[in-house]
Image (cartoon, rainbow, N blue to C red; front, side, top):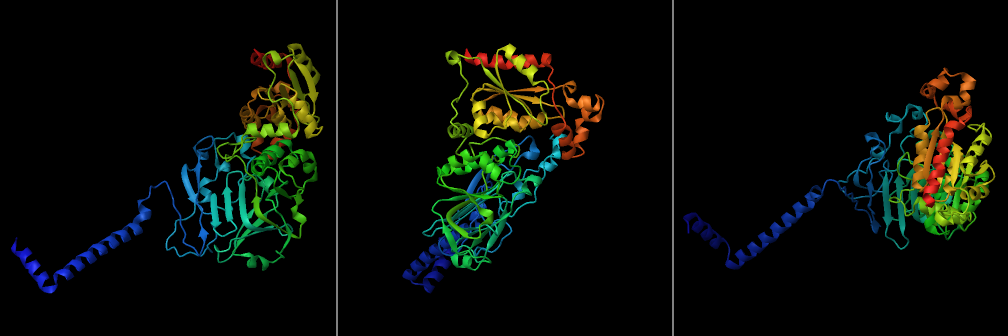
Length: 545
């Protein structure tokens, strides 16, 4: 043993007995473990993998924070439309509020809604004609994906989701709806020291200023408990108690345009309400009686209860679950489409629902030996704009090829026209809302879109081309020449309206709409058009082999 080691042990022996030395050793060992544990606790958050953000708040008794993880897909046409990929987590508390009681000394910020916003107005890859069609709304105070839950006997949860085309919140617990003040109150018994408030417009076309300005704005407030509810600036005492959930949605926006009826309301309402199997009550804001009459069969199929026009209600309606807003496909430029990865339903489910609702017989076009009739083609006529001026010639040409021809305008009521469409194998029409009726076609049928002049290619593909393929329909299109447009006779072949539609589009949506959507009719060149008709017939014959 070295001299310095011997000296060390001699000093230690003189200072402490053997038992005291042993206790000192145990104490040092325990102190070391405590020191290591403390270091691990402090630096734990820095050791996690970078892609996962874990946000935790320590709050008063019983509060449980539900972390909602959503995998964001890369979306869109180019990198300007690509949202942040990977898992992200955020709490369901508006990003502008800071009134949550917490003893956490350091918390990570919520995911910014601006990071995932699809900046449509700034995208340069879109056709110039259509940049003026879309506007960007100002950001709201709701984060992209948020969730708060209280672990008391009555389940109290608030789950909100902000996407490119919609905002939707599901409130569970003590939820009270006051129509006249457009206020929805939800009690969270132990989470908040004050109110948490944000605004919503429950219509699934966020980003379009014209549409959203026609939608009533609602205030959603989280309050600490029922006592706070009673102190609100209106009587929040429950006058009407309901035993089933409610969905609040708007019939403002672009409703009563058939395309927007389906893509903004009917399809989103189906994906939102279907899971309740009819045990849900609809609270309609922006009352629209013609729309209610038009889609009464769909409303009855989704809800077993009489809907409530909530705007005029001065009595407070109380629920245990309220959904504010409607689900929609998360990508901005996806119309008449359901994404099964973000919904428990698909477009096949939706079309099956329509067949059941309207008692439509044909699920798919007849093929093989079951095809004992001539294939039927429906020519959609239009009385006002973008009308065929030679419908009879088109019908005669189709008949010569071998079709049984039906000519009809989509103004006979949804149920009646749905039956007509479902009885046909091909649907032919000029670009417009009437083509939305392809949702009633049997599978493997053909959708045939006529494109007027004006640079409709991108819009036609977005509104009907891609959706048709997603419905298991065959899609064909025919782009007319300038000589087939009434604009040549009105303006002349060399006029800017005929020669350069992009220049007209630069003057704004009103000028574009006036020239090409309102002021244009179509005279199809039969010799040029007939081979395309023959292709549709051939496609059906090929399926029957």
